[in-house]
Image 1: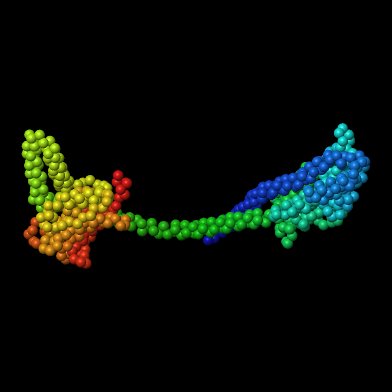
Image 2: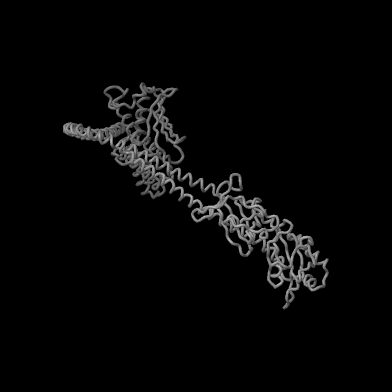
Length: 596
């Protein structure tokens, strides 16, 4: 630990420097952002005051051209009529007063003689208007602050004969600025706050904050201005001016000060924005940087100590590792031999699985051929009847053709064509059923599968005296599977049902398709004695048929179970409450539009 004292001291010193540097940088960045927003607020406030003065300046220019004012200024006219005109203009525009002065400064008419009587022809605004320009001034009268807008009353190509003055109060502007949370104020040439949204600054000496303590004479200020601004001084940080305030003052702590001249208004626009959030943000960022550095240092110290301990421990473990490597080499040699044996076993297992798969396919094919053997007698009868009928119709057609009976001949030929199509359909179904189906799953019409299976099993069911109840749905019912393999499953279920009902008084097989939910169900019911062991009917070589019978191998349902499982479906058997058995095949449905 002694070796780490100097690095720890150096790191703490660096942490302090980093914290101060981050504080300084964060403070400058926050003040820059604050100054940008303050500049925008100051420009908006200046524009509002300028618009306010412009409105009354235009009023003075328009009223100065009134003929009645020109006549009054020349010594004629009706003073009472002009006073009424001026009073109406003051009422409509919200002016404090509107009055007319002669060229020598005498009051000729006014909307409020009390205000106008205090105007003086010695002011700069009067001389400017008397010389033909527009005069403007900030005026203090009896504690009231007003803007004077003076316009010359002129005759064409003559020197002005009088001056029209519009006096506007500052209260509307201050009311407009009151909603701004920042301190906005406008100072005159003497540095006195003339317009502000904070009563604490009203008629205060704003110039003192930038002075170096030099006193001003009382003549520089209007009467009654004695209070200073509630500031403690100013600071300069990152090129910005900061005014400091006491606790409980307008601002608690720092306030960013910005100013810009407004020559059009003869005022200086200034703003104070609370810099407390900026200082707090800089403090938090500096604290975060210091805490991060300390955490990093603590982690680094812990890692260094662990590194030293690890180095010592590694030296101890090196010898043990050497001995371990020798043992690993010996064990690896042993495992290599075991690995070769495992690979041989895996290869033999794959070969066994392939042989099992081929055996299963052969069993499926054998089952289909066995079913074809059982149906051979019925199929021969099905084909023999159409052949005999074709022969008879052909002989009759020859006889009728010799007689010239073409209609009868044409009817016989049509019947021969129908019988040939029937024989072709039977042979086509037999060929499809007998072949090995190795194609992947497709979209299959379950209704067509049932129809084909019933056609192939028709003679076998008829010979067994089995009646079939099958109400085919309207339209197709599309499922995922293989057409031939589904036919084999259904024919196996029909054959088992016929065998089960051999000793039953009533022999009825009911086939139904249910699409009530997300699964399509095909059910086959019989009226036989039911299943002895429903849970074992799908086991290979399980059969309840007599020993020695050709159909008693017990592989049909097992093969059907594997076929349905390969389609991602499910097959199940159960006993019905009223007697008989029911087998249900559940398959994944397919939308008819997708199949098309």
